[in-house]
Image (cartoon, rainbow, N blue to C red):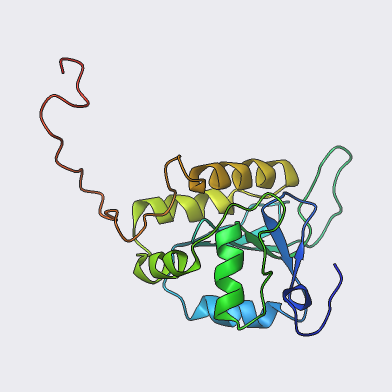
Length: 192
């Protein structure tokens, strides 16, 4: 990860873990953690013996993962996540660059869909930490104890956030309540 002062690459770097994953530099970890502490977002964590400690925050189209490895080294055949802070999702990355005042890329990154940053910011501000979708998103991120799982979760969240597919985190025009919507008669039924 190269770092040039005054650019987004001073705090974030593209990760080899998955196309939608960014690594937070050592210099940026405190700033990201301070921002996370001020947010009311769904969180989850895992603490399993012989596995890294994982803290996860559901943000926008992905979230932030804190991975703390200690103790034994990986067994042959294992593909553990490295310790550090990882941002999952292009929308989450863009939201963090704005929130932290970091100059962001002016063009979409390879594989990045066009992101309406105002819509992402509004959806984040309206997100509820108790929304079932957000809780599920945080819990899903907290399962990422190795590279294959992170790749799978990052791909699933990216697919869900891609236009034309269902959203993982409800936007401002969607209900965040677990209450079902009233369906018009004749739709969504086998008899309809």
